[in-house]
Length: 242
Image 1 (cartoon, one colour):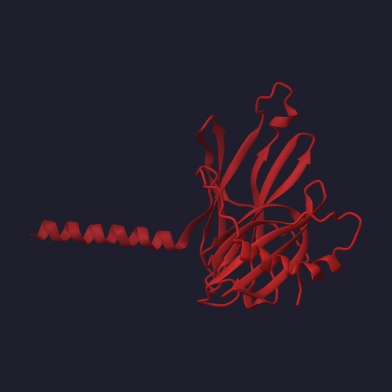
Image 2: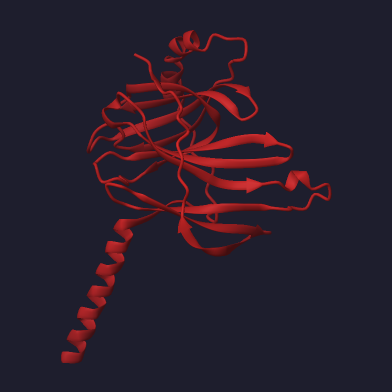
C-alpha cells in the first residue's frame, strides 16, 4: 500500500511538473508541423474590412501603391482587453516594392470594429493568435512576413505585437523564421535552407528561444541546441484610423 501511495505521489508530481512547464514554456512557431490551409474570412467579414478601406486610401494615395487588397490571416483572442472574444484580421492593401507593402490590422468584436491600424510593412504571409505571453491578460498576435527576394535568397520573419486598449500597437519583438538561398544555386539544389522553431518562456519579461531545423524531403532534422532567440524591433509606424 505504501509503495502504491508513493508511486501515486510521484506520478502527481510528474504531471504537475509537466503542467507547470507547459504554462511557462510555449511553442509559438513550428515549421515542422504541416499546417492546414488557413480558414478564409467569411463574405460578411471581408465586406466589413473592405468598408474601412476608404480612409486607408486617403493615407496611401501615392503612385507606388497599386491597390491589390487581400486578407492574409486572422485569429481569435482577447486582443484589446481581458476576457474579450475578438477576432483579428491582417490585410495587405498593396505591395510597394520587393518585400515591402502597405498593410492593415483590424480587431472586431460581435461583428463590430473596435480597432483599425495601418502601417508601411512587409509582404504578409499569415497571422496567429498567441496566448498571453507577458502575463498581463492581453493576447498577442504573431504576424509572419516575407522579406522579399534578393539575389535568389528568400527569408521570412515573425513579428510579435500586442494591442492593449485598442489605441496603440506595441511591438514585443521580431526574429527570423526561415532562410533559403536555394535559388542562388544553378543546379537547383538547396545550398543553405533552414527554419526555426520558436518558443517563449511566459512572464512579465518573456524570453524567446529557437531551434534550427533543416528539411530533407518530407523529414525535418534538428541542428544544434536550443538557444535564446535574437529579438529585434521592426519599428513600424502603426496609425490608428478612426
